[in-house]
Length: 120
Image (cartoon, rainbow, N blue to C red; front, top):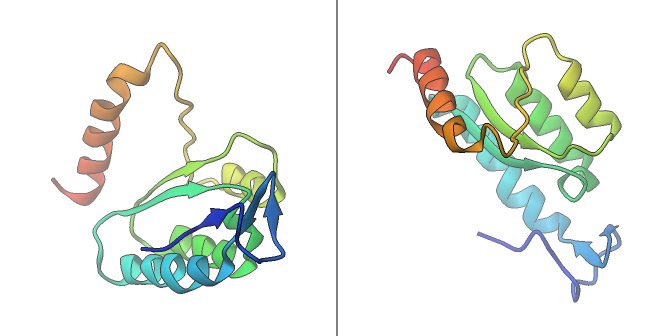
């Protein structure tokens, strides 16, 4: 575990009032994504947004996770950022927007779909 961002971190990347802790991001999140690509049945990445994308290494790790043969469930920010637009435009990505109308049934729907992808 680590700290992704805090107002009192002495780090150059800044998102709003927060400073991004690149060290923890790159020494915890990136190895976790790599391990998931190697050994998990399902990769879960919550979330991929402006703070995480302060690290080009993190973006590359996400790209590698998307390219690996395992299904990936990710949460991406709605904000228009070049990397997020790249993810949205991939032919192997399906974007599901959470709304007030679908939020109560979405966990069951995603569970069924992901279960089918991983064989159970």
